[in-house]
Image (tube, rainbow, N blue to C red):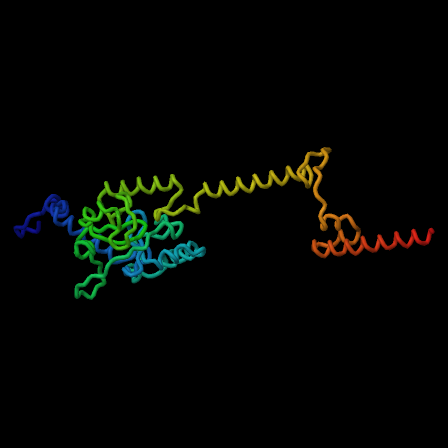
Length: 304
């Protein structure tokens, strides 16, 4: 180019290294790094996961229990929107903190505390400073290196290899709670087939009016409709009674005869009819009746 004996590189030579596809080992390393991040960090708050107070949703994601409680507070949505707007205006020095938050609480789809399961893992006996879980059946350390599962609704955590051992007994080895194969769920699954099964399970539960924890979904529209129908039926019944009269008989129809008790007799007298207490009204009516009887006797005596 400058008569120095050099050559001009072609475009292919410039980009051939950038266009190289990642190898299988590189893909596995990237996946393991992402899985390790999910095991160690809350996807909503970005805080480190506290394995002593951790919950999981129907997808197998891990959250700190406090994060879910804060997200379910009535003012959480507005506060979160304000925080997002504030973060957008902050300097680039806070980009690392924003990057640690993988999603917002609204993206989780958690509507109540019944949409999550509190997990209970056995602490590892290793000398590592990190708090980790250990499978009580296989004694393997749980984490990104080993597939882990938990049981709904008790939330006890095991390794995937332990499922073959605990499934025939149909009881949780930790609490003896009854279990079904469909309620043994993976933690942080990455396989598309596993995610599809989890989606089918939650859709079937919602069709039955249940949540991820197998409890009734109080926020479902079906419950609201049933309560509304009950209130409407009660209003219709009250309107019908009002139309027919206080005793429930049709207009113009003779009321059925009832036995006269002391309270009913007191209601027919002037003063007693204005007394709300049945016992006081009964005594008042009795006194008035005695006075009327005495007055009649005096009138008869005077007439003689």
